[in-house]
Image 1: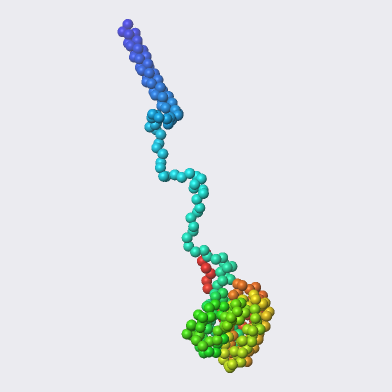
Image 2: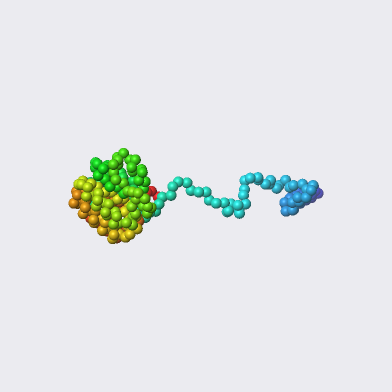
Length: 257
């Protein structure tokens, strides 16, 4: 009897324990279902509606619409833009040597006329023995004390005193011939010869150079002309520079990219 009573007590306690565990599990399931229904319920924005405590407040000023971001123009890049190697080779000024007045015909490849005047200022010739042509400012050359007394003409299509047209090759030849006829040891400077080529043609300018070279030989004079290599074809450039001493050394280093 005692043994049977003990076994009955164990069964009773086990049954009660099982009932308690089942009740706890049921309560937990109800709570979980309630939470899921709250999360999936729509948020009402009408008057008197209570905002859900789980909804995160919107951030102000921290985001932009995708359309606005796409429509914005990219910021400009800073720094300078380097020219292409081809443009750099066509628009570079080569480092010249000094101009020797003992050479009848000399040439300088450059795209800026100031390089020519830099050479002229380095010579020891008396400025009164110089015949200068310019496509820049004639007044600026007249104010240069190192060129005081030189005869200066402007090469231009305009009309006026001390102006000669680049298309008038015969007049240029006559003016140079008269200058050399005044005595020995005189010099002529004719920069930007490509302008004369564009106004006539390369063969006419070549004939002019042949003439002035012969005149310089006879009078122990000198002629210096410059040409922009980027504005002429290789054939025309070779034609013009033929028989002249080219006053340029190695070109400067290429521009960095």
